[in-house]
Image 1 (cartoon, rainbow, N blue to C red):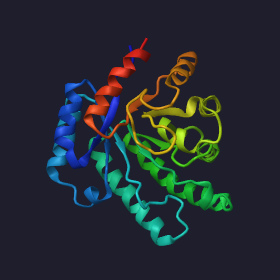
Image 2: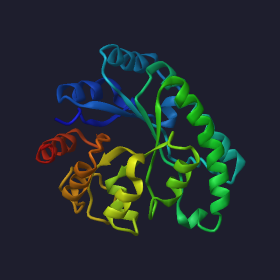
Image 3: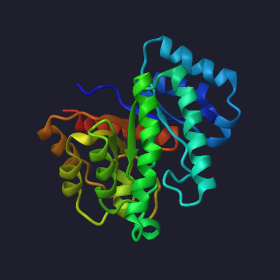
Image 4: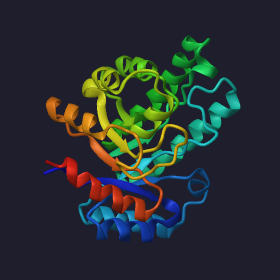
Length: 254
């Protein structure tokens, strides 16, 4: 029996999102929009605290729009770290199991400056990992525009396994230059989380599992052989799509 799946929730609709997930036996990975962090409502926090008081897990997805953890512009880097510190402040109260961040690498911006990207990234993630360890929350980086896992693995190696990685099936379809098996082999025991959604290779549509072209059978066969069970998030953007993903996942639970 697989551990309960997580699914997307948002601070923008946290009360109704939690009620929906509870109804379907799902746990929340709560997206934290930057503007909501700027003026966090006490009632939003209350809903999360009550959820945790029931002994139920929660995960966070940090803001990412316009942010750059290795920003070459010092002002952009300053704002990025400010947002991450706001995530920290909320995490200290809620104590999520994971916090997922976008590492901000793409070959078009940083391919000619890999050393600069790595140096600035290390400074950012070092601080995040320090406070994550202090509150007992695992920090996880997600593939986005990555053509292969190399840059994320550089960070992982530097931090000696204290940093985890999240494999996003939809982003893989859009941006990867290598086959799925090579990703999974390279990630190995650094694979702490999965973001599952589908598309047709042309747009990040976040379709339900099995409604695009991603090979979910190959993914779950590999995980089963390895005996690994990452935290698994059904990352769809509507409730109907989430339910459809949940139904499809029954075919992989054996």
